Amino acid sequence: MGKKAVLIGCNYTGTKAELKGCVNDVKRMHRSLIERYGFAEGDIKVLIDADESYTQPTGRNIRQALSDLISSADSGDILFVHYSGHGTRLPAETGEDDDTGYDECIVPCDMNLITDDDFRELVDKVPQGCTITIVSDSCHSGGLIDQAKEQIGESFNDDSENKQDNPDQPGFVGNIIQKTGDALKSAFHRDDDGVDEVEEGTTVENRSLPLETLVDILKQKTGNNDITVGNVRPTLFDMFGEDSSPKVKKFMKVLLDSFNSIVGGGTDSADGGGDGSGGDGGGGGGGGFMGMVNGLAQQFLKQKLESNAEYGKPAMETEVGSKQEAYAGSKQKKLPENGILISGCQTDQTSADATKSAESYGALSHTIQTILEELDGKVISNREIVVKARNMLKSQGFKQRPGLYCEDKHADAPFICSAA
Image (cartoon, rainbow, N blue to C red; front, side, top):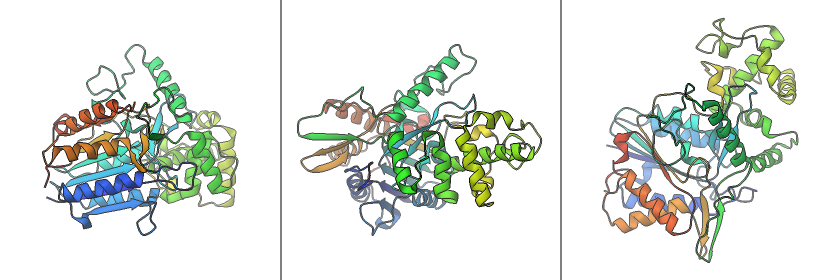
């Protein structure tokens, strides 16, 4: 049985997004994996942005590290991922009437976002008989593994067995509208409804990156002052191309297909053949779609394609079964079998980046380490550590509520693995 880990910490030093405790979280978890759980130094990949001697936690490097972790795994292996950094939410951008909700993302140091759908695709590649535990000490992290079953939490609070929306139930449309409104509110503003009431001498920032701050950083990086909330995904594709999020490339493929359909009178490939390669199975000629997309996006694509005919190649080579795959928000999928997510908070909450006595840390990460130290070698389950973390954070005045998302069989399994 192998034990392998990827640890990611982003402090964003010198930017508008600067945090203080994320790299410290990674260093403490690194020691814990070696000393408590018996991980070998060589089986732990560390990505931090506070030391150039380490691999930098860019979007490309994080995705590569996670892909390498999973591709190297065999049945029976224990995989662990810890992320400390900003989280953010991207609202819908296509203009389609049924594109609702938002994508929950982690924020690499270069702003090359990684979405919940990207994480889900990685988790789905984990070999049978192998588990991956993801601890995400970031804001809006409750839905980071798309469609994972909620064992502890309030992010998907409904009465259905798998906690999925049912369009036949009364009030479904109203619920979607409400969720979309909540998403936009939390995406644009920091959470002021639940101010942490921590002890005197502790200062707190939160690990949420509001969209206006993300847009400002993207403007600074690109020198393009025309970036708006409505074209964040095209901007990310423009900046990172092949290295951009798979979800962003799917979005751009749908956008480009529809643009080309208008120009050439063809059929949207993402609406046609199920393999995303074209066909005449059911596409609509694109006028309706592009008619709903703002004029800025159309002009953006027109200028890019005129100056570089190969501009859209990374997107056009991405497989998209239907344009709904590019939409923001959850899709109807089977529950992920091998993934375990412990989130720092619920999807509509923020996670704290705290400093006390000159020591900075993430509230969830610090609490987990405190619990493990108190156990003195005893085994604790995933459910138990989340319940204890919730109680401890509440007693300390933090408003965030950690969550547990996994199949039933993993809820009472040991956190990470049995101690070495």
